[in-house]
Length: 252
Length: 244
Image (cartoon, rainbow over all chains, first blue to last red):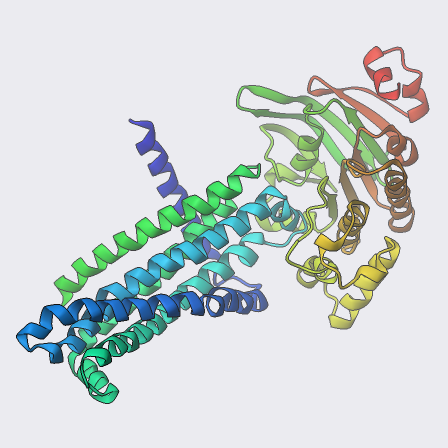
């Protein structure tokens, strides 16, 4: 078997074992509530700026690109519907997921990798504290719950950005714009798009923690942990998205 | 020797990394209250032996009895129970760099002691006083000097009042004056907490100050054992090389 495939299979097996351990430990006391809240803040609050700006630009640019295409046909009034479907179903979750993979995944990978290299994880282990519970369970739980919230927030800002772009070329009011959006969006758009974001968040946290927690000794491994966290979690966000679309098409 | 007095009993310990056989046949007994210093060249497995005792590294074979329990056979829960009785001071101090000095010590106490908040605060202040770091309680590890970091590592370890202390090169990277301070601190901790210790070091001044007995590791086995004065006069050239 080629070495690349072997390495990939070993990584997949390692990730599967790591996620199994997460599900075993997540319901077991002691519950690290203080650290969990700190991670909510670190992962959620500290990503608001980046996610907000990106979301605004996505919505703004999407509307700007749509206007010259639809305006000649007198279909400007369809732009809110087009933007809302595109953003809520696909562009918002995927782009925000990829941004979170870059920002949060690399941060977790580098932090835990650095703790591994400087023997901080070993120090927790030998003092009979469970480092997996303190470091991994809290971070994976936080990303699983925070990434969906960040994506909802990014979607809202993107829709607002779309109206700003639209208001430059038309006199559509914000209330009309949003009422058209709410008329267009169905639960079949919102629910699958929201469910998949929990998988995005879980994957980003899990991969970041796995790469950091299993980093080799040496400073080089910190960079490798951060880098591979981003690469693998970005790839997995895309794969989850593809699966989610297939399953949604079957169900609805 | 009374068997009940032995707190660490290692028999036929073996450990390889790939084809590199590091520990070939380690046999070591440590009595209650005794401080054993391990000497040996770099890379001969002194730290590996310490890490096998706390199961940070799993040995290939052999018996490691700590307080009567064979470490490789223990369940995770039983191992955690034994680990509470063992203090491990890392060469790098391994301080939690996102936590303050106070939080570094609170971390194991919060999780492994029955103390309430007041009790934890008192214990933190007591151990910081023991190691002379009372004034640094709210500092971050990055604000501490090398010697202070080692002291904090010691304070964090003794906070749980362990019965056994494992010291991995406690004076490495320190100037002679600070190294002497840390060596004296080891003796002070020994007197105050009546712990049994294994100290891995290359620092002969440290070995002289802290040791009741010295064992010499060569080619994966302990070849010589004795007091500092006895080994200093050894006929074995390899042993004498450490004292020159």
